Image (cartoon, rainbow over all chains, first blue to last red):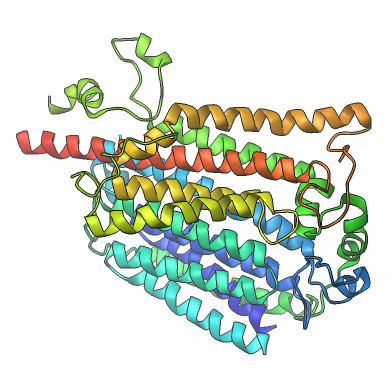
Length: 116
Length: 200
Length: 164
């Protein structure tokens, strides 16, 4: 239980950084931390006590794998989610570069003030 | 054993993310974010997910390189604190409520170490016979749930396309034939030619 | 593709210091070999297309950072990267459509072979190679666009401000 709760605390800190900080790069870092927290939460739910990785080796039987292997389904979902996170981060970074080129600053409040 | 190790590692991650959020210098903020990512990778390794641990540690390095190379080398000035009281107070109240309800909701989840595994037991038992792949995770992402991977490939394709469109030269130029040429990388002379009006 | 020897020599003034260049020359082959190993053995050992593709992209990023952009562009130009990206995305739709001729979409149609062999598991190794190439080319292209393009624009902005 306490592990789930600590992962949610990490998630909340990422969202706090996303809302309350003014620097755009800080906001990107906050979104990255949120991403880590969600991935870790999904993997922790699928862990089985004294589990092994869900990969067959030659000297193993299928019964052993089905008895001791951890849940492979969250791992498959998270594996794609990590690479998507990198793509989204690059998209956000390119938007930041365009904003910097237009306003010459990374400060969110300055950008708001210059609007209109 | 694993539970204690993960507890210590999660405390370490929370401290690292506090430093990453609250420090003034952007470079140390990005490096602290990298430390959190490395700790996440170690946690994946302890939780029996070596595929994800490999991917996470490499993606972490790429995030660090992209953030430092593309943004911090341009502008590393610390932004002086505009203390936005409304945003801070309202977000703190909201997150307090969120954590209370999360603490109640977490009690209903299956306890740590005993997952449900209704579908996954089937995958573990029949994965090798049905697909022939020894790595059950590869069997799931490429055979049982191939649509998921197809959607992921589409998402990364669209995000790369989007950033190329955003990063290319500004529109409405005098020379229209340059639009059909390559989009991303320009030589310095070409950019000088295009951004010459920047000095006016 | 062969690289010109004067570009990767330590006397080339572009890029980082000679210490970094010497170490990168030794480490490069190991990085690329490890990436291809992760991709090709993805259905037998931990790894797969996503992990191996990001490792290969990291290798190209390392070349760019150490030697400057000419060496990395000689190995994989931005045009080649976009062509590889698009064709792998197309093939990743086309190969499941071939499976439609045998039954349904995403059918694992070739014979599965003996378990634990390198050539086994039907189309899964092929999918791994396609995804690995796609992730490599797209991440390298986005790194080139972000770093080189962004830096030039910022330099020009600074010069324009100085002139004012």
